Amino acid sequence: MNDLNILYVFYHGDPVLIGVFLILLVLSIATWAIAATKGISLFDTRRANRRFLQGFWNAASPRGLREVVSSGRGPLAEMARDGWHAAETYPGRHDLSPKGEQRLDDHMIRMIRQSMDRQQLRMQAGQTLLASVGSLAPFIGLFGTVWGIHNALIELSILESVSMDLVAGPLGEALVATAAGLAAAIPAVAFYNVFNRFNRLMQQDFEAFAHDLHAFLMHSDHAPGAAGRQTDSPPLPASDTRPAAEGA
Image (cartoon, rainbow, N blue to C red; front, side):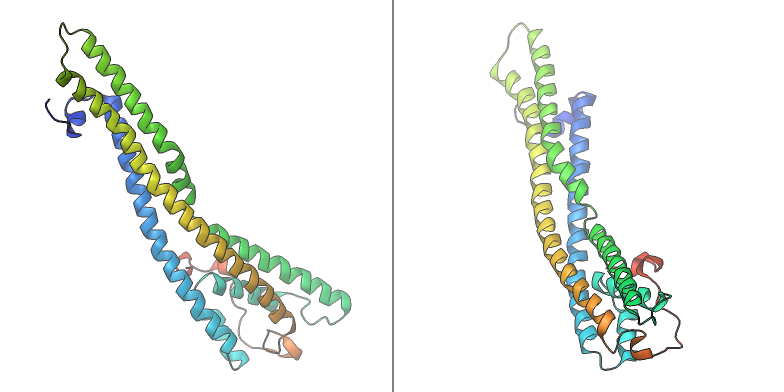
């Protein structure tokens, strides 16, 4: 073999080295697929959150606000629906005694916190695989290199005469495994850091909105049940009872 051709591994390589390259190929494809999917999803999430917040804070009436919460998309809309559902379905909503208000306050904090935790888990989907690829792919490639060099040296040891052409081919193909491992790992690490940064920023938005949502549901005149206001509409469903496709 006069030139280094990666296809030589698949034509003449042993099953172990072929398996290493196939594993790295699958990991690389999975990395780019997750990156593309999450990139589109995060873009839609930011846009949906902006639209929901604009409609939520600009609603002119309780009915309009309820429609915004019911039809909104994105993690913040899911949190608002969960909080709204908790406020509408809490049995002691109209208990205005200090103990009743304290129990309602604790209930709302707990429900909003649980909703926020669910949204954060959804935002982190796929990052475990990116972290795994980033940490394991270089070692998988290194294993392929060591295995390829080992086999190449065994084959060369049985030859009576060894030339540079015979040495460079097998060893070069084995070293490509390390480069393939790095080629799979570097994008995975880069994407993980980008998405992790985005999730930290989103967590700050979740925390801020959770605080504002709690205050709104406890004290606003537009909140469900405020000032003894009743509604004939059924309670809004919680986010975890809605179809998954409606989440951002």
